Image 1 (cartoon, one colour):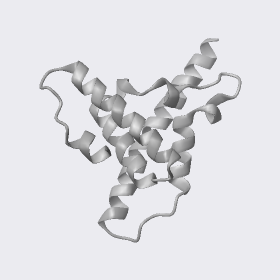
Image 2: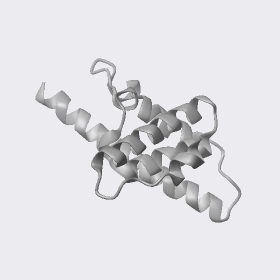
Image 3: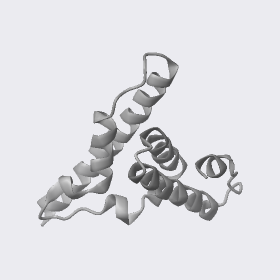
Length: 121
């Protein structure tokens, strides 16, 4: 399913098409995470972010203000990917490290937004 969604072209100049594809990739990334398929999880999440960051689903972004960042599903996924065993040195390992770096950057950005919202309250 992930391969099919990745190969599906988006309609040129159509935001709705790009948004829908990104939402499906976020959904598949979460599904891969629950299935312990961490390689495809990181790929789906990175492709979704690169397609349309604004399509990040509420399930992944939701944070309890009382519990802080540890209550965010996206953060837990990034932590799990960071702790997961890495492939042997080579091209695949470098690809996984680049994906993880992008996801960690997104997570830091999300934490800064949360901190700003907490300070405003």
